[in-house]
Length: 91
Length: 138
Image 1 (spheres, each protein chain N blue to C red):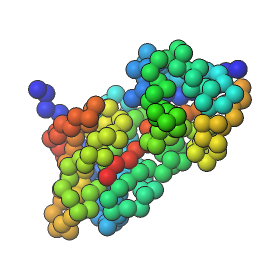
Image 2 (cartoon, rainbow over the protein chains, first blue to last red):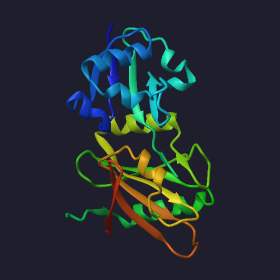
Image 3 (spheres, rainbow over the protein chains, first blue to last red):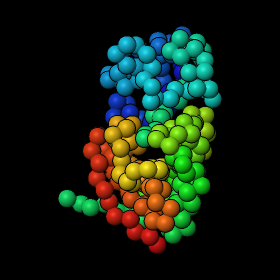
């Protein structure tokens, strides 16, 4: 099943410049694994060594921040749109 | 080495400083959008500091999604990303550098530590490297 994924500028080095790619998976975690198979290096920018979503990466399923859903276990279905945005933050 | 420059209108410059003063003693933050590829800041978008903190800022994630989508629909990009420091100089902190994520943006820092002096400086932050640039007000 196809899920549309929007890639931010800073991560487009992994997608040959593409703003949007397609992937598949029943959960967000599976989607990221699937993307990694075609865009090596991307997953490590999204998930930390402990297997958690990186703190300063925002991932949205349709309009909802996945932190308010089930994080990496969030269920996906065909036609969903996932948006990745680096958090804008600092001190 | 090429020295960069941020060219910004007096109006937008004043809007950033005003926002920073209003939110003091918390840090203020926001974006100025401009046509993609133009390097021209045009549309002032003050953002909520979700941290409401004098030492940290973070865009509210839902607001950021709305604003970034809106820019995308208008074929704009974040030309300027600004925030204030409330007690220290207008220079990127270590956290500013480590979280900088828009390689094409001018990172503007305003310090509100002195109510009578405006400190307004601009930087490029790329791969952990900070380069200050001139600010040209038009």
